[in-house]
Structures are given as C-alpha cells and as structure tokens.
Amino acid sequence: MSKKIAMIFSGQGSQAIGMGKDFYENSELAREMFQKAGDRIGVDFKEIIFEENEKLGQTAYTQPAILLVQMIAYKLFSVECPDIKAELFLGHSLGEFSALCASGAIDYVDAVELVHKRGLFMQSACDAIEAGMMAIVGLDDESVEKICVEAQADGKKAWPANYNQDGQLVVAGMKADLVSLEQTFKDAGAKRAILLDMSVASHCEILAPAQEPLAELMENMVSDNFSAPVISNVTTKPYSTKMDAVALLKEQLVKPVKYKQSIVAIANDVDIAIEFGNGVVLKGLNKRIAKELTTLNVSDMASLAKVKEEICS
Image (tube, rainbow, N blue to C red; front, side, top):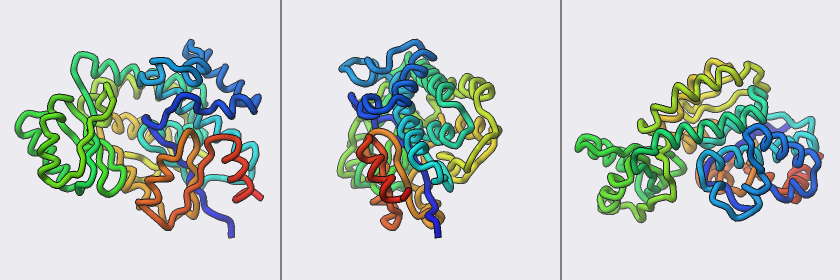
C-alpha cells in the first residue's frame, strides 16, 4: 500500500541567514528561481538571504524569502520524486501560501509578489501603533483565552493568534497591553510569557485593513488548479477552490492559526508529513502534537537525498 503524504510548510520565524544556500550552490533550477523571484519584486534574494542585513527581519521581505526557499525545496523534491503526490497540503500562517503554491493554485513567482505585498499590507496596518506578539508557555488554551477576553473587556487589545501545541499559544495585540498582561499569564500558571521580536500583530483584528487589498490581489493570481486540497488555518478543514482560498486567506489575517488542531485533524488520514524549507520547526511541533505521525524534512541537498532514499525508491 502506498503511503499517504501531507506536504507542510512553516511560517514567519523559521527564516535564517544562509537558508537555501546549499540548494542555490548545487542546483541550476534553484538559481533560476532565485533570479525570477527577485526580478518580480526588484530585489536580490542572494543578498537578502545569504548576507547579514536588516531586510530579512522585515515582514515584507521575510515572507517572500521563506516562501521562495520552501518552493525550491518542494520543486527539487518533485523533480527527484515525480511519482510521489500529496494527499493534502498544510502550512502554518505564511506557510499556507506555500501550501497553496505547492498545490498548483498559484505560480511561485506570483506567490512571491503576493506575500511580499501581504507583508507590506500587514506592516502598514501596524505602522501607526506599537503592535506585538507574545508566546505563552505552560498554560492551557482555555486560561489564555479567558485572560484575553477579560483584557478586551477592560479595553485592552490582546487575542489568541497561534495555537502551536499544548502549552504553547502565541497572543497578538498592542505591545503595551501584552506587556501589562505578562504577570497575569504567569499568575495563572504560565511558565513563561515571552515578548517576541515582531513589529506586527498577526492573526488578530489589528490587521483588518489588510484584508481587502490582499483579497483583491488573490483574485488576480489564484486559480482552481489544485492538485490536492489545502488545509485552512482558520477552519482546519480542506479546501480546493479559488473562491475558498481567497475567502479563507483573507480571514486568516484576523483569525488565529489553528495549527495544533489541524495536525490532530489530519493525523489519521496521512502516514507521513514532509516539511519543506528552512529548519524543522513543524517537525518538532508534530512530535509533540501527534507522535504517531512521522515527519521528514527537506531543507538542503543532504536531507533531500535522505527523503528520496526513504520514500521514493
């Protein structure tokens, strides 16, 4: 019996200087993809990704850089293992755009432009305010949600944003409000409440101004050509139409990423997950969410060869 495979993609925070360099140095296809992506948005991705600089930490450049490396990893895998097809695609936050791209519903160059502009829209929505995000570690979801609801009743802006795993939930909102809640989270039992190095507040109402501009761009770039369904961060359910992609990714800007819930939902439907792109963030989360789900990763030529040997032969 053939294995059922989920192909998965991490989000912002998985970036690192030097990511994808092994692909670039060893693959003509990777070099071509770097060039075409850079030409589309007028940047040199080699400088942004391979050299120390400020841009890789800026949302408008972080997002296309991550997506580009993920799509190179995915395309190189597809060349090496053409007979291996995904049962479904899944991404964490930004990674859902890579999942959409891998499914065939949007060209990777269009996707690079789309997430570049998404990052600009997000930054614009937060420019006039001090927005931020905070990781709450060691506290159950219900307690975090209750504290956020009570904070909102007091006029504060704080919302659950990323459900990563049990005992790890990221909240988003006004930075000052999050800082003011740090002790409240700890008093409720949190081991840590860590303010993240973020200048935007993802997946909350603060990003509402970015919704319509993003949806307008997607209308012109996304198609109905899905090779397999994509799992929505918002609903944890699969979708495979342009109409749903536009609606759900528009909604994703202001609704929490239900990654933990999504993995639980698919764990019995697939045998293996393959994480594409830099690092093993999702592999680590998956181990703690669904131990029975084997997760492999393709992040450089060596890991590509290893995955090929394991599942493509």
